[in-house]
Length: 104
Image (cartoon, rainbow, N blue to C red; front, side, top):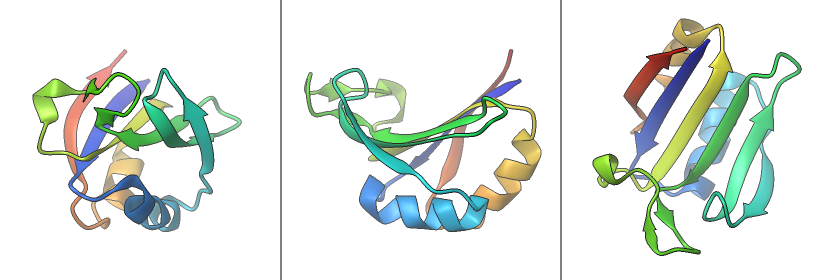
């Protein structure tokens, strides 16, 4: 299973519709102190999960991913067995870049 992190300079509200279109998913808006305030989440029946959140944690006023401060928004693609397919689809989303990829 892959755990990939993508980043963008766009705000999550600007980025969400483009990601939904590219992946054919529908995000649900959530609120969580753990994720730093408002964020978007999609969970598939396969346990695959997409979380789109701000890099700046509004609750704690700190970076979620301090190594990637140039990214205002972060997209976590977790528990996916189709990382290459997702990556090709997300490559079409303007300003979205793969920041980190891990295979667990």
